Every structure is written in structure tokens, then in C-alpha cells.
Image (cartoon, rainbow, N blue to C red):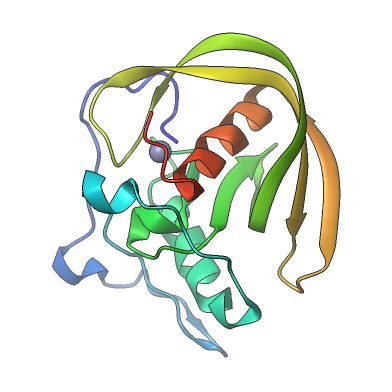
Amino acid sequence: MGAHRSGSAQYRFPEPGGREAGMGALKQEGVIMIQEICRDEAFLAQKSQPATPDDLQIASDLLETLAHHKDNCVGMAANMIGVSKRIIAFENGGSYMVMFNPQIIRRWGPYDAEEACLSLSGVRPAKRWKSIKVQWQNEKFQQRLQTFTGWTAQIIQHEIDHCEGIII
Ligand SMILES: [Zn+2]
């Protein structure tokens, strides 16, 4: 999801092919690459498939792409880099967090928000909840459960919407 303030289209895009010199960090499991941002609304409107341990590389790419866009983006879902899997990555108090197969199981306190998105133009209204209880799997595919509030909760809701094929 876009940082709140950026309503205008000041987004930087990676070079064609999603590569940029010096940015592809080499890791043992393979080359992590910054991926191109998907803006195809027909694709983004599709519900993503469950993620499996075979999808760890996708999460790495997602994190790398999110870090690349850190100036105007605080969260991303895998379909934003063209992969229809239920994986999200987002900023959480100064560090990044990845969730596989996240699900909101409780929510409290509805409010109206306005959000921007790297995949979409402009700022758009969205219904959000102040607190959410989320169940997900970590990178070892261990089940996790935690309550999030405020800004982080809002980012998570935006990214889980992407997994559901919901476009704000
Ligand atoms: Zn978005």
C-alpha cells in the first residue's frame, strides 16, 4: 500500500525486466530480484492461491521490491509483482514482516480511510478496522496469531484485500 501522503504519481519503476544494476542481492537460495509492479486490474482482481513452502523465493522478491519502493510504499502483496499467491510484506515499526496465507479472524472499530497503492492511480476511499486479529504462517510455515492496531493494521488490511482480489 502506498504511503498515505503520496497521492500523485511519483512512483519510480524498475528498469524493464525488473533488474537494476547492483540491486539484486545474491543469496544462497538464488538471486533475489526487484520485480516490476503489476498494474493490470484484471489480474489484480483475481483471488490469490494459497502459498506453500515452495514460494519462499517469491517472498524474497517481494521484500526486495518493497524495499526498493520504500519511499512511497509501505506494503505489498505478491500479486503486485505478478504472482497470484497469498503472500504479503509490509513495514512494521521500522522492520519488514512477511506473512504467508494471512487471515483476519477478528476485527474491531470500523472507520473510513483513504489509501494509495503502487498498482493503482490516485488516493481512494477504503473501509478499515482499527484493530485486527490476524492468523498467518511465518517463513517456516509455523502458525502465528497476533493482534495489530492502527497504521500497521491498516496496511495489513490493504494487503490482505489484494490477496482476495479486492481493489480499493
Ligand atoms: Zn495496494
